[in-house]
Length: 75
Image 1 (cartoon, helix red, strand yellow):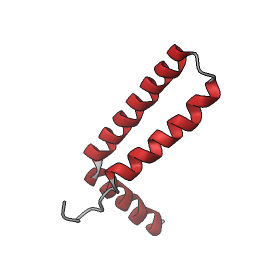
Image 2 (image 1 turned 90 degrees about the horizontal axis):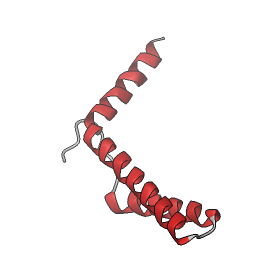
Image 3 (image 1 turned 120 degrees about the vertical axis):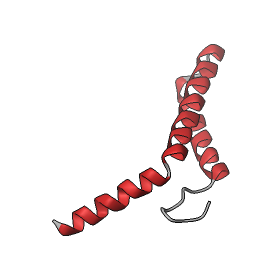
Image 4 (image 1 turned 45 degrees about the vertical axis):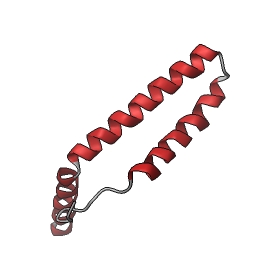
């Protein structure tokens, strides 16, 4: 299908333009999750406390770093 080919190329271009940013975001969220899990476990807090704190941290990170760029946009 011709429409699917264009969408796939657009996705590949977007991911190629944001490759470094994607890796940094994944690493930052993974470090946050692991550190938070260690703190919650070490302090003996109930497990339910972990989930809203993990979500709040991911949301705060998203607001702090801004959006990704489209291919062809100036940095």
